[in-house]
Length: 226
Image (cartoon, rainbow, N blue to C red):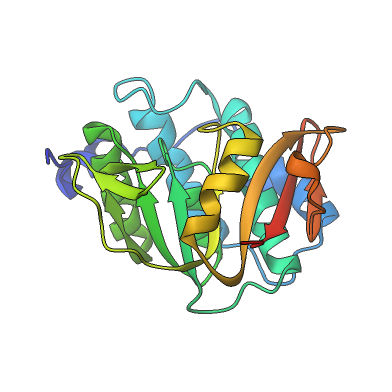
């Protein structure tokens, strides 16, 4: 895999003008009622990296900090949902189709979980690896996809099955397909995180264990049912 080097990354990481994520998001965060403090230093560093690498690596459509803050806010809604459902230190979390790291890198920055980021595209996977290292997060990146029979790597090989307490996927599958396919990833009463438009009905008629509503999205958690 082609890799970004820490030296190259630092060369891009000057300060971002026009405020910071904490100033833009603190009112939203206060309304969500987090149980633990937010790792703003880690989120600010991620913000710098997303804006510096965003265009060159096609990471995000955001071109400025306010635009990026909207995406970070959605990731923090996932964190708030996990807190409400009892996310604990050492829980295993899988984020499928991680892309630029929404919400996977935000989860890694804010929750004490062991995370697996699954992303098929080489450059984005390299970016995710570098960010996990900079966050000093417990986790790794796999280039691959979630198929009907499990996670397959970039060569088509089926990875050994590992059970997770949490599974997220942002804009990869329809809510119904994601809720169904994620069941094979979860252990016990593990939770699938589903992004829905506000006001949407629960997929498959399932009742959410908890939900967090933002301006546009309703982030809901569903316990394993198979």
